Length: 366
Ligand code: ZN
Ligand code: ZN
Image 1 (cartoon, helix red, strand yellow):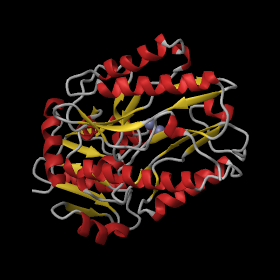
Image 2: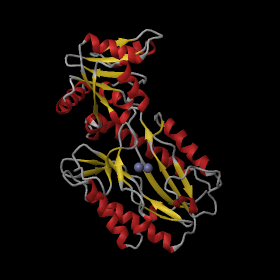
Image 3: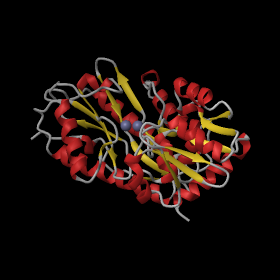
Image 4: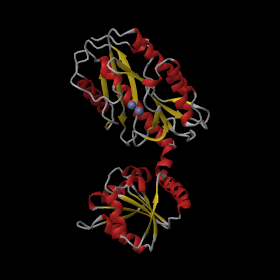
């Protein structure tokens, strides 16, 4: 049995409690997760006796290749997707159908209920996302690959730093290296921020030149060929920085290390966040750590579970999360250090290994 069939079977079990006899998957990433289909504009309909991909003629050959075992409903040009859904449901005599309420626009929901009124549409949220939180062996392999590509790209980019580049040029160089090492591209637009701009947690790379700023924050990741993502952050010391920023660096690293050490199955996500927050609070910088500690990664760059104060979800073996505490001092600079962690049966494994000790963070500009 294919791993995609296994995922669909698990989804069926998860949907039992909803009372829906059928289920329409409209989120393209969820469709990919459940079928292996790498295109978009296609929905998956889970029926009691079969699973049908609803798509259009552009994808017929690709679907046959990527999704053996699935029934295909290819609509003719000019036929709307909703018409195709209605016909397929009528043929199968389904009257109660679940839909992904968290992945649908108001407009789309209106069309579903108006154009297919005989169906009782049941809002179901998060069923596929819950399955996606725990990765199988193939997915873990893919994330390792995404981490590896990102790390190689970073090593090359780091060696090439001259100090005369703009933040944008560093970002472009990283993306180029990610592609050369076999990635589809970056898993998100990299954040490259020097000096005081590192105090902006989501700074987009600007035309500021690195030189004369003592600090360079780079948050980047790779998208491997199957669509799985990595997400890493390092701060490089490229010149003279104040003793205060050095203290901040050491504190963030300590908070990150303590939080990583606490990761094992059964521990609540909020507890891991708390471990890091306590270290930063005690160091006197609590109010400068204004975001959650981390998030799951997979086909999406941000997915469940969230490592934040409000999340009482317990960690499970197979989850892959980032741990990324940060301290941001407005007008001065910021430090965030981020790694990707796999929850294992006995504890955890840190998937990324870009050096991060204080001494390792120093770069001599060539
Ligand atoms: Zn990141
Ligand atoms: Zn992140």
